[in-house]
Length: 263
Image (tube, rainbow, N blue to C red; front, side):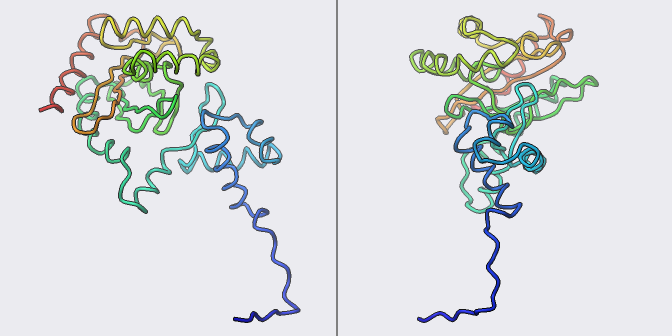
């Protein structure tokens, strides 16, 4: 088939010059080049874009849930909203199906403890929050959002997922992530190792305000029946509220809801 040219037609502007193309480039760059998170300056430098433009577009992408921004270490990550989009186009999104299945359990825990409750899964060397249920206690300790990533070992849920790995695999993750730990309030490799020992001794992880002052969290990992996948449930509260008696109550609630899932 022959094509017909129009001599007077104007040359179209390159697609890369459009706002949509620039935003798409940033999204792909975060996903492919900075899977464990990238700062504004690094992302802008990678794509050759000025920081003001990159910041405006990254902020817009985060607002729409396509990216998430970690305010503590100033890094951007791929947002969980992308999986929602994938699910609508492809009906099979295992992580979203898992989230839907475990949502009643998550809501029960937050209702019984009155605290914000999170569901996390492992993604390579990170943990990813895939769902949350807000508590009713007047003082909120909501420190994670859906899609937020943490290096395995940082946070109660993330530490639980790390502890659920075979020892050799867990040690490999520790070494891969050790340079990232210090971004979170100067946490050291030896601290994470100690938390793992305590998890294996107690059966749960406890973060007593080490990452964010005045915010404590308890976490526990378990294998979802029939899925073969490990997930972590974590409950966050203000430090002053997480005394020993209340910690026992929260852990009992988590264990009870996990056991109901096995029935």
